Length: 420
Image 1 (cartoon, rainbow, N blue to C red):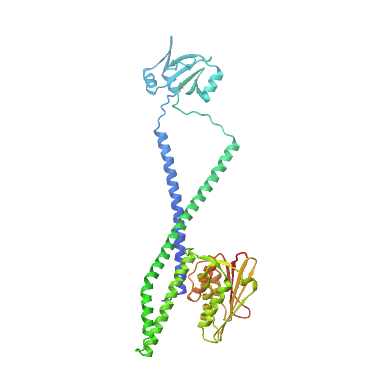
Image 2 (image 1 turned 90 degrees about the horizontal axis):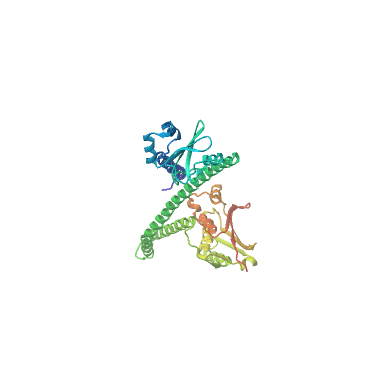
């Protein structure tokens, strides 16, 4: 069954849509996951902070619980028990910095403080003790905790530094966004590669399973074709079966090679080869098999190209020239003999090969497919040319297709030549 152009467009549209949907879903998934993780972190910090009771006794509460008597000051029983329970201490200073009352005050602390001492302890610590101060008329109530129980730090920032912080936050936001998009792209690419690898493995498995029965069909059809006891019609039918089996075998081989080249899974067995030798051998093989007078191949190799050496896979390079000649013979559209011209020369450390025929040339649709970089399913009549293009690109070369002004199509190949 031949797939219509509309079905191909629908298939490509669905393929792009699936890829886009997966990419967008991955981006949103990562964004949501990142947001949820950050939210959980913030909530955890907030919950821990709320549930952490500093137990700091407020200086105002102490002043309210403190009663002045004729002999000094007296603290009520409940507040005194709270100081014991929270393991805190307090002292009251008069206008001269003299301690006039205290409870559980550490012995290492003085009983007299200057204005500079009071200023320092209001911002920092008092000999390592975190303290809070509350002014009450001309007196100062100081409530302290034990060492290493409270972090206290006075922070001041310049406006320029705060502006820098704002810009930094914006930069980090952009970095996070870029990271999320990049991660989504990597996941999408990995997913796509897995799908394509599975596709290639499926094609390879099917091809392997088909080879055995196909070989049997070819073998039996060949036997029947040369069986003298059968009628001429039966032998011709067997010949058709054998020929179509060979066509199927070539199609399977092309399918495997195309998939492997497209996803760089074809291991290139590179060696030093002479393109001039390969061109001649392929041309001779075609001329020997062709009907006399129906195929002409003119090979022109100048002195620079004669000794040119490239590092390439010999079998694949031979496949290139066989496919080009086959395409001219089968799809050239010539009304008389097929005439092919092959030129080979070396220029600027590259081996250049120009293949030209006397056919009707390539249609605009064929040229668009051969020149385009988008992945498209190759039509049956250009499958061989698509393989040619992929083989040359796999070797790091350049290739171009076009039509000659005088008629016919051409293909120009450039391969990196080894130094002589």
